[in-house]
Length: 252
Ligand code: NDP
Ligand code: 8X3
Image (cartoon, rainbow, N blue to C red):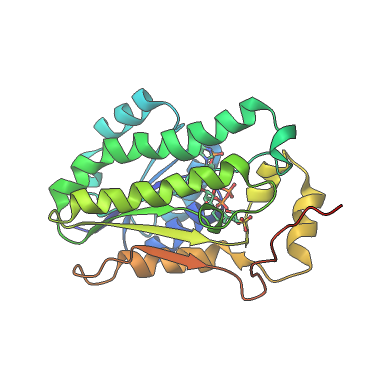
């Protein structure tokens, strides 16, 4: 029986690239996201190579998440990797200008959604046992503050700490936990963050060399396929053309 990866947010960016990378290696795929037509297109692309199960899912809906996991066909229940990737940033402006709803949407998706999926899939990982992994997509924003990061960075700090705490409880179970924390990567992330501003997205990425979705998929694959006795706790990855900046100081 082949390994199974369960991916949230498989319709775009890192999630879609990961689906392609794991398919190349013969893994069975459980692909979820809200945009059904994209899931269907990805299944059409990959189903000739590997078994693919698709499910439209909003990770914010705990009942729907549990229902989807309960309804997984037998061939997809022996989950080897849970890739908690679905997430988003909104409102890249100062905190004092941000609508409360945008903060809620980030918390509901990046925190509550990730917790919903982890809680529902964990029993399957425990059943599979040794060598399985929960791979959470955090961010450099979970470690390093920057202007406009407000709740987004805070949700990714939650992702990191939740993963570390999970490790403490899962240490004897064979289930590994990793926080993969990318820096700037060109996906639909900025298009979503700016609510559809393609010019802003192009401007951010076009004058530097960002990470690609495939770069991160390769790191996910690396972490997932390490020998069972190795756990990478946190993997922070930036483009070589991105680094930290100096502290902001308010002056007279
Ligand atoms: P994309 O916008 O390209 O992909 C985001 C994915 O998340 C989509 O597949 C989207 O699917 C899914 N998603 C969003 N909201 C929900 C929801 N409520 N329920 C289910 N799925 C959802 O961005 P990335 O690939 O860049 O983002 C993936 C992860 O990486 C996110 O957690 C992001 O925070 C993180 N990240 C991104 C970085 C970057 O610079 N790109 C850097 C560091 C971290 P759909 O809309 O179909 O539901
Ligand atoms: C987002 C990455 O570089 O915009 O998670 O903070 S960055």
